[in-house]
Length: 162
Image 1 (cartoon, one colour):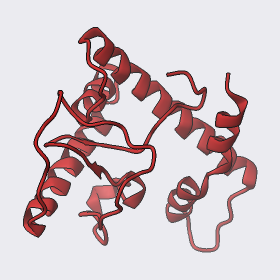
Image 2 (image 1 turned 30 degrees about the vertical axis):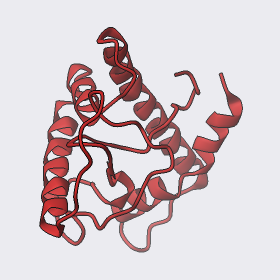
Image 3 (image 1 turned 180 degrees about the vertical axis):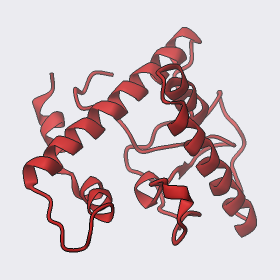
């Protein structure tokens, strides 16, 4: 286990804390331990999904994880509801790019590469809307890749094992 990578994931809980705070009344406070616990859970969830998507790519002899691989992994692991919300998000994000006249690069070797830098932060197509209670904001903003696939800045999981 890579303790440095794990510690870095746990300490960077500002985006998760913002989402937690948004679900609570304005006067509510969240203990540091609760934020750390939630960040650990989020890191493990990302690691779990990414590991499954990576395994699919290895079986198909591909080196690149794309958005469809993430959706497949979420569905195969029993997270159909999240996968469906993410499909809607991706469709709206792509519509936003088309409406802005932003060009996409031609597809290369089956998808796009995960970008640990996070890429450019565009305005979310969900900003200012209710989304039926779904929490999809700038923290999950996809990075424009090469082609019609978009990926997220997930990088290595909490254990650093990829």
